[in-house]
Structures are given as structure tokens and as C-alpha cells.
Image (cartoon, rainbow, N blue to C red):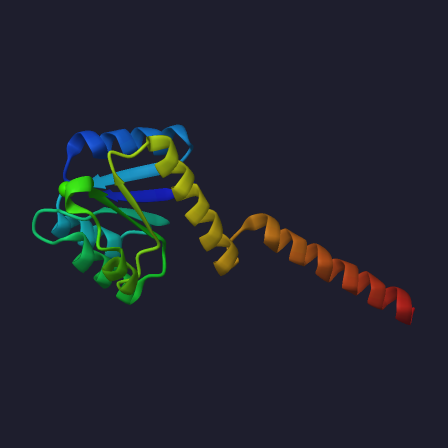
Length: 149
Ligand code: CA
């Protein structure tokens, strides 16, 4: 089961996201401040991080930079319209996507799924792809045996 870390200081938005991820068959944990969020992002085994920009203690840019220094997992940045994300800055720090509040939870879930899928394809973690490779290896072995028997 995919596991998402939500770093978001507005409880209603964090809970809304959590509900949607769980409805979509994923697990989600919530952190309400930047320091705790960064700690859990670095220590936990999450598949994707949804990161609010304006947070108590540490802001989203700093957290993104520090996660990216050690982890390649997808990071989606979220910001309120009034604090419009500096996308260039976010890109330099390694964020994979951006979404502006108020957002549609369905769109956020769709983006999360797309990034998880892309990351799996890039890292080769996807189960069906491995099976395909094994099948191909079996096929080559059979072909080899047939040719040299
Ligand atoms: Ca915030």
C-alpha cells in the first residue's frame, strides 16, 4: 500500500487530503509543522510527500531542499493563492509538481497517482514490469535449450 506524508498546518485541509488518499487505497500521515514534517520525511518510509509552502518553524522550500538532498521520492508543493508559489525556486529545489489552494481533492489524488506511477516506472519498482522481465528471461532460456538440445 502506498504511503503519503502530508505536511500541512491547516487541519481541515490535511484531513480532507487524508480522507481522499484513504478512499483511493493509500495510507496517509499528517504533520502540522515544518520541523516535525521534515523529521518524519527524512526518517519515514514514504512513497510521496505533499508539502505545504507556508508552515510554522520551517517553510516548504527549506523542507523540499533538505528532503531532496537525500531522497528521490516525488514531492508535490501546495500553496494558498495569496502566497503564489515561486515555481522556478521550487523547481531548483527539486519539487515535482505544484498545486494551488483551494484545489480539487480529486485532481490532487490524480496528480499523486500520476507521480507515484511515474516514479515506479523510473525506479523499476513496479511489480508487473518485473514479471515481464522474468517471463522474457524464461523465454530466452527455453529458446536456448531448444536450440542446443
Ligand atoms: Ca500553510
